[in-house]
Length: 162
Image (cartoon, rainbow, N blue to C red; front, side, top):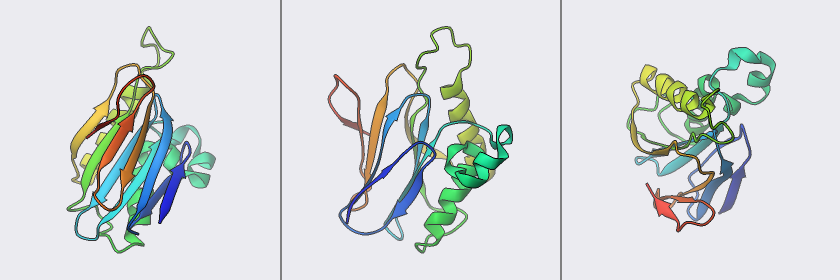
């Protein structure tokens, strides 16, 4: 019970009632949220970049940093809590992937992150059921183990859910 706070590249899963998993300051980064209704387990990864090939050492050390290593690492973490390791039956939600400090769309990191995550999910035969991605706002997201509710906040706005 309590709050599990993830930093950039962090990932975690929980099934203890009363637990909340959260991450802050999602700009171009994307939070991948997996919810397993069968085991009442939730998981989150704070993905920063699309592909691990740019830094294999970092991918080994912090697999949640990259889309291609983060999603499988999160599934593995959830498998330790009794979930199906292939992700079948899980609810998938995405938050983040904004265009922050890139007004000319030079790098498109947020968009590239979202697409890379979806590519990995599709290869696992998993699909996104809800998302709040893009735009130009930073987001904080929290997922509640008890209900699976995903709450998003951003400075100057009322909280919302997906």
